[in-house]
Image (tube, rainbow, N blue to C red; front, side, top):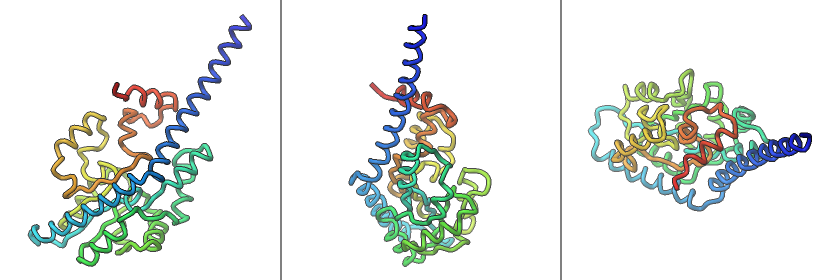
Length: 256
């Protein structure tokens, strides 16, 4: 009986260690891909090249009933926060631990192509709205970071941050009352429409199919392997799940 208990204890401990190692490897690979893959940089540059073409086309073809505007997300769309993700892995901590401190440092570097494109839009006299789910209290540090790396129109009146709800739809509609929104740029489908909010993996896939004509024209999508609604949908929106449960969700999602 004693031997059986020892064996059981060993299996529990090694199983837990395997789960933690597996989870860490999963996170490490996501950060590795984002930070080192030239493919990611190529996709980011490609997105902003498409944005320039789309903006030029919109300025020529859209009737001028209201001033033109662009809505752009910040994290992993304009600013690279992958060093924060790396810190979390190495410290064994998880979001939101350390996030406020990272924002206050205001040292995130720009996503390739982002500064050049937004300055191009600025030259075309297009208003830029920075619509982010960062908190209102993060506005000063975020403005400092955006300004330091060369983004234009970094004005408090154009920082549209989260007050209560995470959905960006009410904020987009408010902007649309006075502006003609030519482009929306983000790394998460919820940056474009509330049709994606809180939806399952299959429903999100179907919604992309429904709106496929918008991508590469009015919607400009950037890659993000680090986090996002894609992962929440994978976990069936149970973000409080244990690492073991999340690992199981990931394995079950594999298509054989």
